[in-house]
Image 1 (cartoon, rainbow, N blue to C red):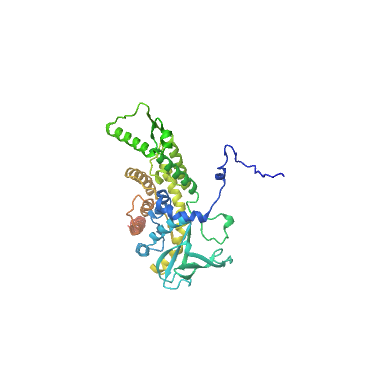
Image 2 (cartoon, rainbow, N blue to C red):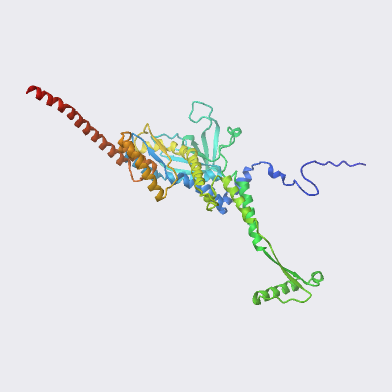
Length: 446
């Protein structure tokens, strides 16, 4: 009787086990297992805190600058005061933190009407509440009306609060997602994005494992080797405790007298491990984590730039990435809230309302002095040629951040003063032009 044996010809060598770890080259994503680790990673891993917390803080570190030709300084102050009362800046920062960690979070707009009723600018916004994505689920089917502002999304959502369910209109819920899903999953039932830790996950695990292994090697850097005559027979006869006690006594004598006393038949030697190359290997693992997180090493790990590099280009690239995150994550939140804020503070939404995020770059005192001298020379020549006015120069100083104490009222007053001076100069010019004509008439009369 013959027995058939089925063999699979693969990449694994049965003798040397080479190729047994080739499965690491395959890309896979297990959202259930991954999401179960997010809370633990946030609690225990400081690199995760830096990736999710530091970037969210930098998104709101320098708050937006609102501009509008129809809004004066007092009205802008009302908007800013209302933002402070509703703690919009804090809510946006926390939303960016949890969206970065979990992949998405919801911001619930609470007004004087029920949650299932559509919100509009005429309602009074009372507070903003963050809702974990696990408590939010869509209701019904997606909106297929291409003319609807909610096209492609759900009109109603369901929020779990304790043992009761609350239906929420889409206008009251702002969904903040981190990394978008792939295009093939655009119309899947999942309404959330992916965590910012998804591309960092495997690299971060390898870095943590490397750090732990290096830490374990420190304890093994020096090994004492005792060669005892008759050790095998003593162990076979059950004298383990006597052997351990003898070695402990030898170690105690050595640590006390810095000398070692052994039988002539026994031997002792020390073996030390070399750590050459481990530092370079740790640096490479660290750089891989920083690259996967899209953050410079100087910010993520607090390390100064190595070699001849000053780190200025890395910081500039990081600021550009933060600005891109502000545009993709922070701006949609504020654009949903601004109509309600303007209605509450101003009574209507200005037609030319816009805002920008200021640059995160901060100049040193020497750099500010140099930039100000260059700016004054250039603008001085343009003002002499009549290209620029004093109010335009003051506004540019405020926008560039060279003078942060220039307010919108100061610029308005300077503009009015220049217009008054231009009117006075025009009147003087007309009087001067009319004076020769009057003198000519007087001469002819004589």
